[in-house]
Image (cartoon, rainbow, N blue to C red; front, side, top):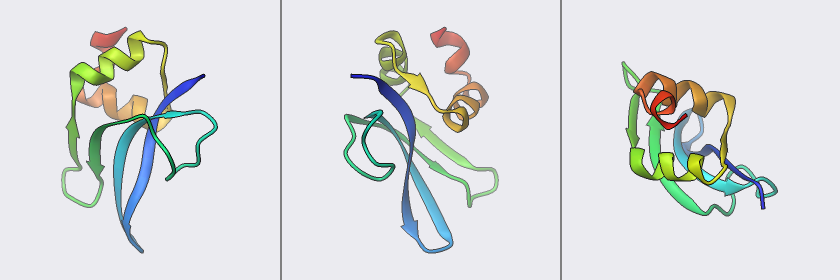
Length: 84
């Protein structure tokens, strides 16, 4: 089972709010996931990110690959560089 760390969209129309989740590659974007790792709210200035850094490091250690967007968020928060 290949695991990806990616965004799952929630919120209303034109008011996006994302959960950062560890999910199976084959699961739909907003569908089933293994664990919620944090949230990302792009509407606030600056964008609000809440992460469970220990769990993110755990999943990366287990072989999970972050999506491009999540990788950028993790680098900005200083988590991805520490996990490599």
